[in-house]
Length: 256
Image 1 (cartoon, rainbow, N blue to C red):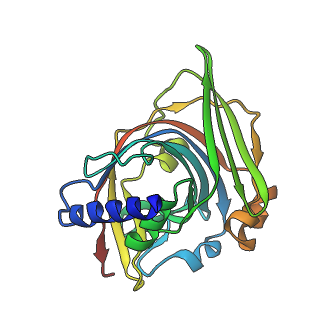
Image 2 (image 1 turned 180 degrees about the vertical axis):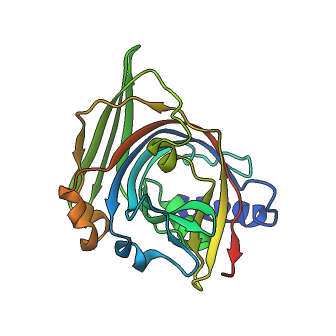
């Protein structure tokens, strides 16, 4: 009963907020973002790209990233929703372009909150699912240890990364900047129309990452057999971003 009441409340709040494209419908903090990026063939992304989007590539390579982070101080129209303020998220995303606009498209997103997953699917047709998951940050003056554990497909999955506790700003022409800085998110509505929404945040600093890390994730179970090859693939790039407060604005339909 509680979940259905909360879902109804969230839905009413966001439906009202979507009447204005100037005011963000969601504000939060995205913190300690792990971006584990893999190079893939552009054809691997074709089944996911709606009309109007093309892969955003470096040379002849397209990319996907496994992204794990903490969603903190979440507010819908400025209002915190009880038990839905702080939670982790893990997603698989690809990098796309609409004309000259660079952005991301989500292949699948996992959160521990049923209401958030339901709302994202119902209102925005986003590929969310709710699963048992936890995150933890341990730190001292020198290091931060970022851990994510979650359950899916009858298996325990986990990530654990150690970073140096001295954030720095990558150059604009760096690989880290290419993968972490995007103003636009893309998706489709239930009729298959392309949707674009704006995300605002300051340029993120990154933490130097230790070369050794723990990754026990079955991409085939999480995202489908077509992604199982990532289990044995060496990452193209790894970035851990400090994160910041963010604003997400209501989406708009694009007619390419």
